[in-house]
Length: 210
Image 1 (cartoon, rainbow, N blue to C red):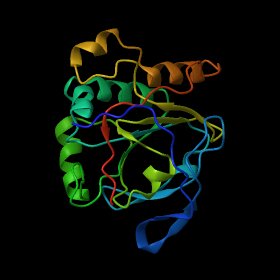
Image 2: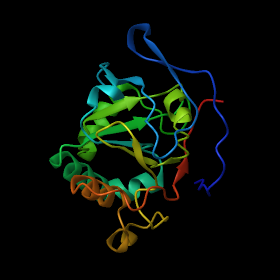
Image 3: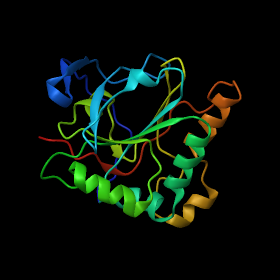
Image 4: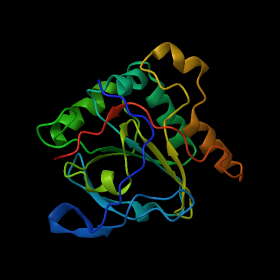
């Protein structure tokens, strides 16, 4: 399975998110840490339209997901991702799991398939969002599954990168890893600045449409 090393993100221009009922919203280039997170609309696994800016006033975590990726399996089969999601939600965080897998590519999910997986794996995110055209993923330069982003209560992007500092598919490494997402959310809750604002994303490449 493919693993990614840090690499410069290519400029992405004139992006449009196609949401439910033909609604669309333009997106800018890859997001910069410390800047306002670009707004977007996507449909969830039930067909409901979800807009990032509607959660202003609450922290938001975005998690890129591919059920066929062994790095994703590491965190879900061990229960680590669900535990991180659950702890975040208890703090009032909104958790968005986003699937940018293109139709015909590994990890692509229909709404019904996502509902079934969500229940089977006991996922605790607030919404499972479908981005089959990959527009939001590319706008945020999401490179891997998982690739994590945190937006603070003011709408600023305060973290982007891997879920932790152990870039392997070995579940045993979770015990000694620093969970960057949990740490950042704890710091935000305490009114502190996020100490690790960017970290290497690791995992399988996001399977975008060609």
